[in-house]
Length: 145
View 1 (cartoon, rainbow, N blue to C red):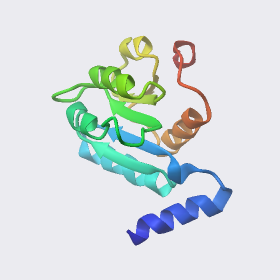
View 2 (view 1 turned 90 degrees about the vertical axis):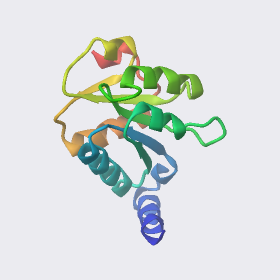
View 3 (view 1 turned 90 degrees about the horizontal axis):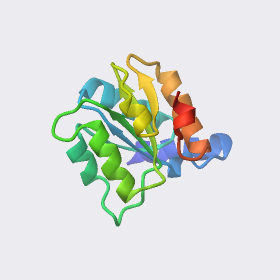
View 4 (view 1 turned 180 degrees about the horizontal axis):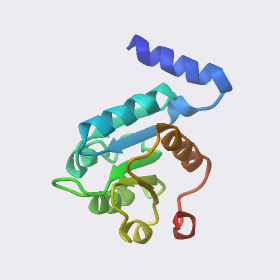
């Protein structure tokens, strides 16, 4: 609890941004990738939750909770994969921005109007992409090409 308070104070006082109020959901079945992303984004001052698959992620998205601003997800996951997860989350939260991480490129990303980020990726790059997503409106197909 004390750590989270310090992280929020640091984010609030450093540049006056509202990063501490921005919510991100990280979904990846690889625990190493998932945990690193969560820690890096928390250090940036974001409120971050995580899940290991689409079904678990949907449990974080009930209709009565504060919506997520960004969904970062892998494509290939057990139980519910990335494509179905994105479609179902957008029903609940139509304005969510989506960043997809995958070792293989798929036209699925274009079909879903998301930003594709190939694995491996740099942590600095992910932070920049999240900031960019939060500054703009929802990603469009033309912006992902």
